[in-house]
Length: 504
Image (cartoon, rainbow, N blue to C red):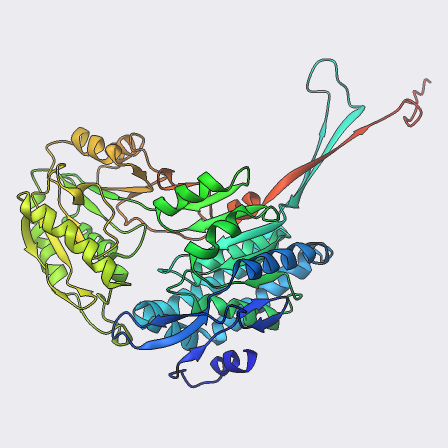
Protein backbone atom coordinates (compact mmCIF):
# COMPACT_ATOMS: atom_id res chain seq x y z
CA UNK A 1 0.00 0.00 0.00
CA UNK A 2 2.75 2.46 0.93
CA UNK A 3 4.54 1.80 -2.35
CA UNK A 4 1.34 2.51 -4.30
CA UNK A 5 0.44 5.60 -2.31
CA UNK A 6 3.94 7.10 -2.41
CA UNK A 7 3.70 7.42 -6.17
CA UNK A 8 1.79 10.58 -5.45
CA UNK A 9 4.89 12.30 -4.10
CA UNK A 10 6.57 12.49 -7.50
CA UNK A 11 6.05 15.32 -9.94
CA UNK A 12 3.76 13.46 -12.32
CA UNK A 13 0.02 13.36 -11.71
CA UNK A 14 -1.45 9.94 -11.02
CA UNK A 15 -3.71 8.81 -13.83
CA UNK A 16 -3.88 5.07 -13.23
CA UNK A 17 -6.60 3.44 -11.16
CA UNK A 18 -5.48 2.74 -7.61
CA UNK A 19 -6.47 0.02 -5.17
CA UNK A 20 -6.32 1.25 -1.59
CA UNK A 21 -6.01 -0.62 1.68
CA UNK A 22 -7.14 0.60 5.07
CA UNK A 23 -4.72 1.93 7.70
CA UNK A 24 -4.31 0.44 11.16
CA UNK A 25 -1.41 0.51 13.63
CA UNK A 26 0.88 2.04 11.02
CA UNK A 27 0.28 -0.65 8.38
CA UNK A 28 -1.83 -0.86 5.22
CA UNK A 29 -4.06 -3.92 5.08
CA UNK A 30 -6.71 -5.54 2.94
CA UNK A 31 -10.06 -6.37 4.46
CA UNK A 32 -10.59 -9.98 5.45
CA UNK A 33 -14.06 -9.65 3.93
CA UNK A 34 -12.50 -9.69 0.48
CA UNK A 35 -14.94 -6.93 -0.51
CA UNK A 36 -14.10 -3.55 -1.98
CA UNK A 37 -15.99 -0.39 -2.88
CA UNK A 38 -15.48 1.01 -6.37
CA UNK A 39 -15.04 4.79 -6.60
CA UNK A 40 -16.14 6.27 -9.94
CA UNK A 41 -15.58 9.72 -11.37
CA UNK A 42 -19.02 11.42 -11.24
CA UNK A 43 -18.21 13.37 -14.41
CA UNK A 44 -17.51 10.47 -16.79
CA UNK A 45 -18.24 7.35 -14.69
CA UNK A 46 -14.66 6.11 -15.08
CA UNK A 47 -13.24 4.03 -12.25
CA UNK A 48 -10.85 6.05 -10.08
CA UNK A 49 -9.93 3.26 -7.68
CA UNK A 50 -11.23 0.89 -5.04
CA UNK A 51 -11.22 1.01 -1.23
CA UNK A 52 -11.72 -1.76 1.28
CA UNK A 53 -15.21 -2.65 2.53
CA UNK A 54 -14.15 -3.39 6.08
CA UNK A 55 -16.01 -5.61 8.50
CA UNK A 56 -17.27 -5.06 12.04
CA UNK A 57 -14.35 -7.12 13.33
CA UNK A 58 -11.94 -4.75 11.60
CA UNK A 59 -13.85 -1.76 12.96
CA UNK A 60 -13.35 -3.17 16.44
CA UNK A 61 -9.65 -3.63 15.78
CA UNK A 62 -8.97 -0.05 14.65
CA UNK A 63 -10.77 1.34 17.69
CA UNK A 64 -8.94 -1.02 20.04
CA UNK A 65 -5.60 -0.06 18.50
CA UNK A 66 -6.42 3.63 18.94
CA UNK A 67 -7.27 3.06 22.59
CA UNK A 68 -4.09 1.07 23.21
CA UNK A 69 -1.92 3.89 21.81
CA UNK A 70 -3.53 6.72 23.76
CA UNK A 71 -0.98 6.64 26.57
CA UNK A 72 2.06 6.73 24.28
CA UNK A 73 0.66 9.76 22.44
CA UNK A 74 0.01 11.54 25.73
CA UNK A 75 3.63 11.07 26.73
CA UNK A 76 4.64 13.51 24.00
CA UNK A 77 4.79 17.18 24.88
CA UNK A 78 2.57 19.79 23.29
CA UNK A 79 5.61 21.05 21.39
CA UNK A 80 6.32 17.59 19.98
CA UNK A 81 2.70 17.20 18.84
CA UNK A 82 2.79 20.64 17.25
CA UNK A 83 5.99 19.79 15.37
CA UNK A 84 4.33 16.70 13.87
CA UNK A 85 1.36 18.76 12.67
CA UNK A 86 3.71 21.32 11.10
CA UNK A 87 5.68 18.61 9.29
CA UNK A 88 2.40 17.16 8.02
CA UNK A 89 1.42 20.60 6.72
CA UNK A 90 4.68 20.85 4.80
CA UNK A 91 4.01 17.51 3.10
CA UNK A 92 0.47 18.58 2.18
CA UNK A 93 1.83 21.65 0.43
CA UNK A 94 4.42 19.57 -1.44
CA UNK A 95 1.77 17.11 -2.62
CA UNK A 96 -1.09 19.56 -3.14
CA UNK A 97 -1.22 19.26 -6.94
CA UNK A 98 -1.33 15.45 -7.26
CA UNK A 99 -3.58 15.12 -4.20
CA UNK A 100 -5.92 17.73 -5.65
CA UNK A 101 -6.00 15.84 -8.91
CA UNK A 102 -7.11 12.63 -7.21
CA UNK A 103 -9.79 14.53 -5.28
CA UNK A 104 -11.03 16.13 -8.50
CA UNK A 105 -11.42 12.70 -10.07
CA UNK A 106 -13.24 11.09 -7.14
CA UNK A 107 -15.75 13.86 -6.31
CA UNK A 108 -15.89 16.03 -9.44
CA UNK A 109 -14.63 19.21 -7.77
CA UNK A 110 -12.91 21.75 -10.06
CA UNK A 111 -9.19 21.01 -10.06
CA UNK A 112 -8.23 24.49 -8.88
CA UNK A 113 -10.63 24.23 -5.94
CA UNK A 114 -9.41 20.74 -5.04
CA UNK A 115 -5.78 21.88 -4.91
CA UNK A 116 -6.85 24.89 -2.85
CA UNK A 117 -8.56 22.54 -0.39
CA UNK A 118 -5.29 20.67 0.22
CA UNK A 119 -3.40 23.92 0.81
CA UNK A 120 -6.11 25.25 3.11
CA UNK A 121 -5.84 22.07 5.17
CA UNK A 122 -2.09 22.56 5.45
CA UNK A 123 -2.67 26.06 6.82
CA UNK A 124 -5.25 24.66 9.24
CA UNK A 125 -2.71 22.14 10.58
CA UNK A 126 -0.15 24.93 11.08
CA UNK A 127 -2.67 27.15 12.86
CA UNK A 128 -3.86 24.26 15.03
CA UNK A 129 -0.29 23.64 16.15
CA UNK A 130 0.03 27.29 17.16
CA UNK A 131 -3.33 27.37 18.93
CA UNK A 132 -2.58 24.18 20.83
CA UNK A 133 0.58 25.69 22.28
CA UNK A 134 -1.47 28.57 23.66
CA UNK A 135 -3.78 26.38 25.74
CA UNK A 136 -3.40 27.18 29.42
CA UNK A 137 -4.82 26.02 32.72
CA UNK A 138 -5.77 28.17 35.69
CA UNK A 139 -5.44 28.33 39.45
CA UNK A 140 -8.29 29.65 41.60
CA UNK A 141 -8.43 30.40 45.31
CA UNK A 142 -11.54 29.28 47.16
CA UNK A 143 -12.14 32.52 49.07
CA UNK A 144 -14.65 33.95 46.58
CA UNK A 145 -17.48 32.19 48.45
CA UNK A 146 -18.36 32.59 52.11
CA UNK A 147 -17.25 29.68 54.21
CA UNK A 148 -14.15 28.99 52.12
CA UNK A 149 -10.67 30.47 52.21
CA UNK A 150 -7.37 30.55 50.40
CA UNK A 151 -6.61 27.26 52.11
CA UNK A 152 -8.52 25.60 49.24
CA UNK A 153 -6.94 25.97 45.79
CA UNK A 154 -8.28 24.65 42.47
CA UNK A 155 -5.77 23.79 39.77
CA UNK A 156 -7.41 23.19 36.39
CA UNK A 157 -5.85 21.83 33.21
CA UNK A 158 -7.16 20.13 30.08
CA UNK A 159 -6.92 16.43 29.27
CA UNK A 160 -7.88 14.53 26.10
CA UNK A 161 -11.23 12.79 25.81
CA UNK A 162 -9.65 9.59 24.46
CA UNK A 163 -10.51 8.03 21.10
CA UNK A 164 -12.15 10.47 18.67
CA UNK A 165 -14.18 9.03 15.78
CA UNK A 166 -13.95 11.44 12.83
CA UNK A 167 -16.51 10.99 10.05
CA UNK A 168 -16.02 13.32 7.08
CA UNK A 169 -18.26 14.33 4.14
CA UNK A 170 -17.86 13.76 0.42
CA UNK A 171 -17.86 17.43 -0.57
CA UNK A 172 -14.73 18.47 1.36
CA UNK A 173 -13.25 15.03 2.05
CA UNK A 174 -9.74 16.26 2.87
CA UNK A 175 -10.36 19.59 4.59
CA UNK A 176 -13.34 18.62 6.72
CA UNK A 177 -11.58 15.43 7.77
CA UNK A 178 -8.37 17.31 8.51
CA UNK A 179 -10.28 19.91 10.53
CA UNK A 180 -11.22 17.06 12.90
CA UNK A 181 -7.89 15.22 12.92
CA UNK A 182 -5.66 18.20 13.70
CA UNK A 183 -7.42 19.47 16.86
CA UNK A 184 -8.05 15.92 18.06
CA UNK A 185 -4.34 15.11 17.87
CA UNK A 186 -3.26 18.45 19.31
CA UNK A 187 -5.54 17.89 22.30
CA UNK A 188 -3.81 14.54 22.92
CA UNK A 189 -6.45 12.17 21.57
CA UNK A 190 -5.99 9.21 19.27
CA UNK A 191 -8.12 9.14 16.13
CA UNK A 192 -10.19 6.75 14.04
CA UNK A 193 -11.20 8.18 10.66
CA UNK A 194 -14.20 6.88 8.72
CA UNK A 195 -14.22 8.59 5.30
CA UNK A 196 -17.38 8.77 3.16
CA UNK A 197 -17.75 5.98 0.63
CA UNK A 198 -17.64 8.47 -2.26
CA UNK A 199 -14.63 10.60 -1.47
CA UNK A 200 -12.77 7.95 0.52
CA UNK A 201 -9.50 8.03 -1.39
CA UNK A 202 -8.05 11.45 -0.57
CA UNK A 203 -8.54 11.13 3.23
CA UNK A 204 -6.52 7.91 3.16
CA UNK A 205 -3.46 10.03 2.45
CA UNK A 206 -3.59 11.37 6.00
CA UNK A 207 -2.16 8.00 6.99
CA UNK A 208 0.93 8.39 4.86
CA UNK A 209 1.33 12.12 5.52
CA UNK A 210 1.19 11.84 9.30
CA UNK A 211 3.34 8.71 9.33
CA UNK A 212 6.04 10.54 7.41
CA UNK A 213 5.62 13.51 9.75
CA UNK A 214 6.52 11.27 12.70
CA UNK A 215 3.17 10.28 14.17
CA UNK A 216 3.58 7.06 16.20
CA UNK A 217 1.83 3.95 14.80
CA UNK A 218 -1.73 3.44 16.00
CA UNK A 219 -2.38 7.07 16.96
CA UNK A 220 -4.25 7.61 13.68
CA UNK A 221 -6.21 4.77 12.06
CA UNK A 222 -8.39 4.95 8.95
CA UNK A 223 -11.14 2.48 8.16
CA UNK A 224 -13.15 2.45 4.95
CA UNK A 225 -16.46 0.74 4.38
CA UNK A 226 -20.16 1.23 3.99
CA UNK A 227 -21.82 3.32 6.66
CA UNK A 228 -24.83 1.02 6.56
CA UNK A 229 -22.60 -1.89 7.61
CA UNK A 230 -20.11 -0.45 10.11
CA UNK A 231 -21.35 3.08 10.86
CA UNK A 232 -23.56 2.35 13.87
CA UNK A 233 -21.00 -0.08 15.28
CA UNK A 234 -18.29 2.59 15.20
CA UNK A 235 -20.51 5.26 16.76
CA UNK A 236 -21.77 2.97 19.53
CA UNK A 237 -18.44 1.36 20.36
CA UNK A 238 -17.70 1.67 24.11
CA UNK A 239 -14.06 2.64 23.48
CA UNK A 240 -15.04 5.63 21.31
CA UNK A 241 -15.10 8.71 23.53
CA UNK A 242 -16.40 11.30 21.07
CA UNK A 243 -17.92 11.46 17.58
CA UNK A 244 -17.15 14.37 15.25
CA UNK A 245 -19.33 14.19 12.14
CA UNK A 246 -20.00 16.34 9.09
CA UNK A 247 -22.85 15.36 6.80
CA UNK A 248 -26.59 15.39 6.40
CA UNK A 249 -28.97 16.39 9.18
CA UNK A 250 -30.74 13.06 8.83
CA UNK A 251 -27.56 11.11 9.51
CA UNK A 252 -26.52 13.49 12.27
CA UNK A 253 -29.82 12.99 14.09
CA UNK A 254 -29.41 9.24 13.75
CA UNK A 255 -25.92 9.40 15.24
CA UNK A 256 -27.27 11.45 18.15
CA UNK A 257 -29.96 8.84 18.75
CA UNK A 258 -27.55 5.89 18.96
CA UNK A 259 -24.37 7.42 20.41
CA UNK A 260 -25.52 7.36 24.01
CA UNK A 261 -23.67 9.67 26.42
CA UNK A 262 -20.76 10.40 24.08
CA UNK A 263 -19.92 14.05 23.38
CA UNK A 264 -20.88 14.97 19.81
CA UNK A 265 -19.61 17.61 17.40
CA UNK A 266 -22.05 17.70 14.48
CA UNK A 267 -21.82 19.89 11.37
CA UNK A 268 -25.03 19.30 9.44
CA UNK A 269 -27.22 20.78 6.70
CA UNK A 270 -28.43 24.30 6.05
CA UNK A 271 -30.94 26.40 4.16
CA UNK A 272 -29.04 29.67 4.27
CA UNK A 273 -31.16 32.65 3.25
CA UNK A 274 -29.89 35.88 1.72
CA UNK A 275 -32.07 38.84 2.74
CA UNK A 276 -31.53 41.65 0.24
CA UNK A 277 -32.73 45.10 1.37
CA UNK A 278 -33.45 48.18 -0.71
CA UNK A 279 -30.19 49.87 0.28
CA UNK A 280 -28.00 47.02 -0.99
CA UNK A 281 -25.25 47.43 -3.57
CA UNK A 282 -26.94 45.19 -6.14
CA UNK A 283 -23.95 44.62 -8.41
CA UNK A 284 -21.82 43.44 -5.50
CA UNK A 285 -24.73 41.48 -4.03
CA UNK A 286 -25.36 39.64 -7.30
CA UNK A 287 -21.69 38.64 -7.57
CA UNK A 288 -21.70 37.29 -4.03
CA UNK A 289 -24.99 35.42 -4.46
CA UNK A 290 -23.86 33.68 -7.66
CA UNK A 291 -20.54 32.69 -6.11
CA UNK A 292 -22.20 31.52 -2.91
CA UNK A 293 -24.96 29.58 -4.65
CA UNK A 294 -22.99 27.83 -7.39
CA UNK A 295 -19.42 27.18 -6.28
CA UNK A 296 -18.85 23.41 -6.37
CA UNK A 297 -22.28 23.22 -8.03
CA UNK A 298 -24.04 24.18 -4.79
CA UNK A 299 -22.83 21.05 -2.97
CA UNK A 300 -22.00 22.93 0.21
CA UNK A 301 -23.84 23.09 3.53
CA UNK A 302 -23.12 26.83 3.58
CA UNK A 303 -24.25 27.51 0.01
CA UNK A 304 -26.69 30.36 -0.61
CA UNK A 305 -29.89 28.32 -0.83
CA UNK A 306 -32.62 30.95 -1.11
CA UNK A 307 -32.85 34.69 -1.74
CA UNK A 308 -35.44 36.93 -0.06
CA UNK A 309 -35.41 40.29 -1.92
CA UNK A 310 -37.40 43.41 -1.07
CA UNK A 311 -40.01 44.45 -3.69
CA UNK A 312 -38.19 47.61 -4.75
CA UNK A 313 -35.06 45.82 -5.94
CA UNK A 314 -36.24 42.28 -6.73
CA UNK A 315 -36.57 42.64 -10.52
CA UNK A 316 -33.19 44.34 -10.91
CA UNK A 317 -31.43 41.87 -8.63
CA UNK A 318 -32.85 38.81 -10.38
CA UNK A 319 -31.83 40.18 -13.78
CA UNK A 320 -28.27 40.78 -12.54
CA UNK A 321 -28.04 37.30 -11.02
CA UNK A 322 -29.39 35.80 -14.25
CA UNK A 323 -26.77 37.55 -16.38
CA UNK A 324 -23.93 36.41 -14.15
CA UNK A 325 -25.31 32.86 -13.88
CA UNK A 326 -25.50 32.48 -17.65
CA UNK A 327 -21.77 33.32 -17.81
CA UNK A 328 -20.77 30.40 -15.59
CA UNK A 329 -18.73 27.65 -17.23
CA UNK A 330 -20.25 24.16 -17.22
CA UNK A 331 -18.51 20.85 -17.81
CA UNK A 332 -15.25 19.08 -17.01
CA UNK A 333 -13.85 19.73 -13.51
CA UNK A 334 -10.36 19.00 -14.84
CA UNK A 335 -10.79 22.15 -16.95
CA UNK A 336 -11.98 24.07 -13.86
CA UNK A 337 -15.57 24.48 -15.00
CA UNK A 338 -17.51 26.27 -12.25
CA UNK A 339 -20.47 23.93 -12.64
CA UNK A 340 -19.39 20.30 -12.65
CA UNK A 341 -21.16 17.03 -11.95
CA UNK A 342 -23.22 16.34 -8.88
CA UNK A 343 -21.91 13.49 -6.77
CA UNK A 344 -24.41 10.92 -8.10
CA UNK A 345 -27.37 10.41 -10.42
CA UNK A 346 -29.53 9.88 -7.32
CA UNK A 347 -28.67 13.39 -6.13
CA UNK A 348 -29.48 14.78 -9.58
CA UNK A 349 -32.88 13.10 -9.45
CA UNK A 350 -33.57 14.67 -6.06
CA UNK A 351 -32.63 18.17 -7.24
CA UNK A 352 -34.72 17.75 -10.38
CA UNK A 353 -37.67 16.73 -8.22
CA UNK A 354 -37.43 20.00 -6.30
CA UNK A 355 -37.33 22.00 -9.52
CA UNK A 356 -40.27 20.11 -11.03
CA UNK A 357 -42.33 20.60 -7.88
CA UNK A 358 -41.73 24.35 -7.91
CA UNK A 359 -42.60 24.71 -11.61
CA UNK A 360 -45.75 22.61 -11.21
CA UNK A 361 -46.87 24.89 -8.37
CA UNK A 362 -46.40 28.11 -10.33
CA UNK A 363 -42.82 29.29 -9.97
CA UNK A 364 -41.14 30.99 -12.94
CA UNK A 365 -38.08 29.49 -14.61
CA UNK A 366 -35.48 32.24 -15.07
CA UNK A 367 -32.75 30.03 -16.54
CA UNK A 368 -31.40 26.48 -16.38
CA UNK A 369 -33.43 23.31 -15.82
CA UNK A 370 -31.22 21.29 -18.12
CA UNK A 371 -29.43 18.03 -17.32
CA UNK A 372 -26.84 15.85 -19.02
CA UNK A 373 -25.87 12.75 -17.07
CA UNK A 374 -24.67 14.11 -13.69
CA UNK A 375 -24.31 17.66 -14.99
CA UNK A 376 -27.12 20.02 -14.01
CA UNK A 377 -27.20 23.52 -15.42
CA UNK A 378 -27.43 26.32 -12.82
CA UNK A 379 -31.13 26.99 -12.33
CA UNK A 380 -32.86 30.14 -11.06
CA UNK A 381 -36.50 30.05 -9.96
CA UNK A 382 -38.54 33.23 -9.42
CA UNK A 383 -41.91 33.67 -7.68
CA UNK A 384 -41.23 30.76 -5.36
CA UNK A 385 -43.74 30.47 -2.53
CA UNK A 386 -43.63 28.83 0.87
CA UNK A 387 -45.90 26.04 -0.42
CA UNK A 388 -43.08 24.73 -2.60
CA UNK A 389 -40.54 22.16 -1.40
CA UNK A 390 -37.60 24.22 -2.69
CA UNK A 391 -38.46 26.91 -0.13
CA UNK A 392 -37.59 24.55 2.73
CA UNK A 393 -35.60 21.53 1.55
CA UNK A 394 -31.84 21.60 1.07
CA UNK A 395 -31.09 20.83 -2.61
CA UNK A 396 -27.30 20.33 -2.46
CA UNK A 397 -27.20 21.21 -6.12
CA UNK A 398 -27.11 24.21 -8.49
CA UNK A 399 -30.63 25.58 -8.00
CA UNK A 400 -31.51 28.91 -6.38
CA UNK A 401 -35.05 30.05 -5.52
CA UNK A 402 -36.13 33.68 -5.15
CA UNK A 403 -38.90 34.16 -2.60
CA UNK A 404 -40.16 37.72 -2.99
CA UNK A 405 -41.06 39.36 0.32
CA UNK A 406 -42.83 42.61 1.20
CA UNK A 407 -40.80 43.57 4.24
CA UNK A 408 -37.79 42.75 6.36
CA UNK A 409 -40.16 41.36 8.99
CA UNK A 410 -41.54 38.85 6.49
CA UNK A 411 -38.01 37.89 5.43
CA UNK A 412 -37.05 37.25 9.05
CA UNK A 413 -40.17 35.15 9.59
CA UNK A 414 -39.51 32.96 6.53
CA UNK A 415 -35.84 32.56 7.40
CA UNK A 416 -36.64 31.51 10.96
CA UNK A 417 -39.35 29.02 9.99
CA UNK A 418 -36.72 26.73 8.50
CA UNK A 419 -35.78 23.57 10.39
CA UNK A 420 -32.19 24.60 9.72
CA UNK A 421 -30.19 27.34 11.41
CA UNK A 422 -26.68 27.35 9.98
CA UNK A 423 -26.05 30.83 8.56
CA UNK A 424 -27.94 33.83 7.25
CA UNK A 425 -26.99 36.77 5.06
CA UNK A 426 -28.06 40.41 5.01
CA UNK A 427 -27.20 42.69 2.11
CA UNK A 428 -27.53 46.42 2.75
CA UNK A 429 -25.45 49.55 3.20
CA UNK A 430 -27.55 50.42 6.25
CA UNK A 431 -25.38 48.74 8.87
CA UNK A 432 -27.61 49.74 11.80
CA UNK A 433 -30.57 47.99 10.18
CA UNK A 434 -28.39 44.98 9.33
CA UNK A 435 -27.39 44.56 12.97
CA UNK A 436 -31.00 44.80 14.10
CA UNK A 437 -32.07 42.09 11.64
CA UNK A 438 -29.03 39.95 12.50
CA UNK A 439 -30.11 39.76 16.13
CA UNK A 440 -33.50 38.37 15.04
CA UNK A 441 -32.18 35.54 12.85
CA UNK A 442 -32.10 32.08 14.45
CA UNK A 443 -28.80 30.92 12.98
CA UNK A 444 -25.27 30.23 14.14
CA UNK A 445 -23.68 32.99 12.06
CA UNK A 446 -24.98 36.05 10.21
CA UNK A 447 -22.94 37.37 7.30
CA UNK A 448 -23.41 41.07 6.51
CA UNK A 449 -22.65 41.89 2.86
CA UNK A 450 -20.91 38.54 2.39
CA UNK A 451 -21.78 34.98 1.42
CA UNK A 452 -22.33 32.23 3.94
CA UNK A 453 -19.17 30.18 4.31
CA UNK A 454 -17.09 28.09 6.67
CA UNK A 455 -14.12 30.11 7.81
CA UNK A 456 -11.67 31.66 8.28
CA UNK A 457 -10.80 28.52 10.19
CA UNK A 458 -10.06 30.27 13.49
CA UNK A 459 -13.57 31.80 13.54
CA UNK A 460 -16.26 29.95 15.51
CA UNK A 461 -18.45 27.83 13.22
CA UNK A 462 -21.74 26.44 14.49
CA UNK A 463 -25.38 25.85 13.68
CA UNK A 464 -28.66 25.82 15.57
CA UNK A 465 -31.70 23.54 15.24
CA UNK A 466 -31.09 20.81 12.61
CA UNK A 467 -27.85 22.40 11.44
CA UNK A 468 -25.57 21.06 14.09
CA UNK A 469 -24.37 20.60 17.63
CA UNK A 470 -21.30 22.14 19.22
CA UNK A 471 -18.86 24.80 18.04
CA UNK A 472 -15.96 24.26 15.65
CA UNK A 473 -13.08 26.51 14.66
CA UNK A 474 -9.49 25.75 15.60
CA UNK A 475 -9.35 26.68 19.30
CA UNK A 476 -13.02 25.79 19.80
CA UNK A 477 -12.45 22.31 18.35
CA UNK A 478 -9.42 21.73 20.59
CA UNK A 479 -11.56 22.68 23.59
CA UNK A 480 -14.42 20.46 22.43
CA UNK A 481 -12.06 17.50 22.04
CA UNK A 482 -10.63 17.88 25.53
CA UNK A 483 -12.07 18.42 28.99
CA UNK A 484 -11.07 20.30 32.11
CA UNK A 485 -9.59 18.26 34.94
CA UNK A 486 -9.54 19.79 38.40
CA UNK A 487 -7.19 19.06 41.29
CA UNK A 488 -8.18 20.73 44.55
CA UNK A 489 -5.39 21.33 47.04
CA UNK A 490 -6.54 21.61 50.66
CA UNK A 491 -3.81 23.21 52.74
CA UNK A 492 -3.44 21.88 56.27
CA UNK A 493 -2.56 23.95 59.29
CA UNK A 494 0.73 22.08 59.49
CA UNK A 495 1.70 23.10 56.00
CA UNK A 496 1.07 26.81 56.44
CA UNK A 497 3.77 29.40 56.91
CA UNK A 498 3.43 31.53 60.01
CA UNK A 499 2.91 35.14 59.13
CA UNK A 500 5.79 37.19 60.50
CA UNK A 501 5.11 40.67 61.82
CA UNK A 502 7.97 43.02 62.61
CA UNK A 503 7.57 45.85 65.09
CA UNK A 504 10.03 48.63 65.63
